[in-house]
Image (cartoon, rainbow, N blue to C red; front, top):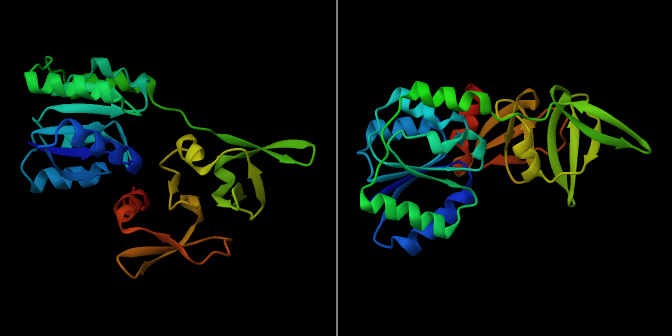
Length: 250
């Protein structure tokens, strides 16, 4: 049995692979993909797997965009952190849906449904789009910062990047001003619009406007220079390169 995972959160991928090894030891995960672009390319060059685990929100868009480019007939188990997508209504070759973090018992039930061959009637891609349209996720338009006893707001279009330094998260504006914020980068990554901001590495989340230069680096990595940033060793791993390039070019 072959399984394809389409998921852009590495911790979620690792957890899913671990749970699958415990529940389906005979199964083989043939690939883990994190973007719509990579998934389309994979389907165009590989035979369909027996089962697909599919996240709704990927690094470069909504996963349903995959089905506009390629025909997928393999059964799908949706995985998402957003129950507002009303996934119970999604039946595009779907076996089931799982809310993240994935509960082992719910995974077992979904796999049992797959093994039993049960499958709900299909609906069209247009129906799916109509379902998710009113529930599109919203993102922060401004952040609160403190200046002594005074509180002010910083609009997201004025933010160059966020970075962590000595366990403190700092917001830096396009003008180079720095402010402490009361969130960790993992939280901020989920608060800001993915078309504007990208998680470069564990230390930086950058806006598209702050990207000054991008260079190839050793061992199939990229080096990024951010505007008004003194750190000249900001590296993007090989695993994140594809998603980063897709983000730059969208």
